[in-house]
Length: 274
Image 1 (cartoon, rainbow, N blue to C red):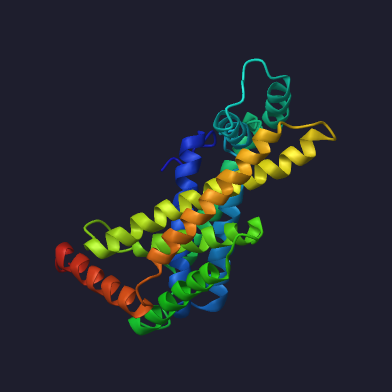
Image 2 (cartoon, helix red, strand yellow):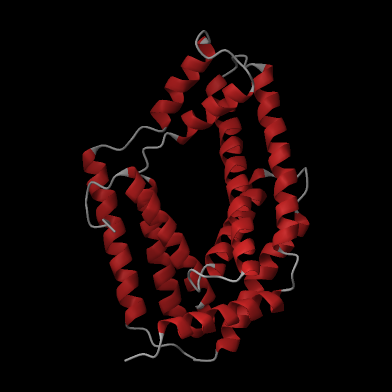
């Protein structure tokens, strides 16, 4: 909603970006029953829209992450010249786009979404057999499960971030049947959501560490700040691995069975078509 408004507010942009990620997750699930060229075109347009909307965020992510880490470290904010200097530098990096840039980004996003919508609306499915979708679901599940098995304390930040994207895709697919999920599916959705949140915080902290290295330019940073960030990331990794073990505990065939049951219930609640 509001995607055609050239002066999208940051909250509307964030909501639309989440909807785009959900659409990309469902598009990934439908890949086996879509023409390859059409799938690639729609995926590309949704990615274009998401990138355009990313420039509309006013959230000043670096500043917010820095201030949280500073408080968590118990450092005095009011008297710190280091915090004020970093806050100013990160504020420039996170500066909100001007009105002209907003118009350009919103226009690109709107046109990209409309192109994807038109393509999907005119693309016939290659098959009505749900078995192909089931195989795709199991593949998405196993991809996330394998990533979990490969992660450990020494894993670099990009690998944790890649797992977050896989977890979010899986969460959106689990939400596909809509409200009224069975208890096991509802638990899985809430587990995936919490896991993605922890991995998102870890990504923000990893980006903060990278930016701190650039911004410090040889100037000494509070040791307690760096230790706090490292400690928090270790905690997030530990809790993420625990949540991941719970999320991927059931075999993929059982997840597929639960989703099929949920979809049948959804169709039953909606009643016969016209």
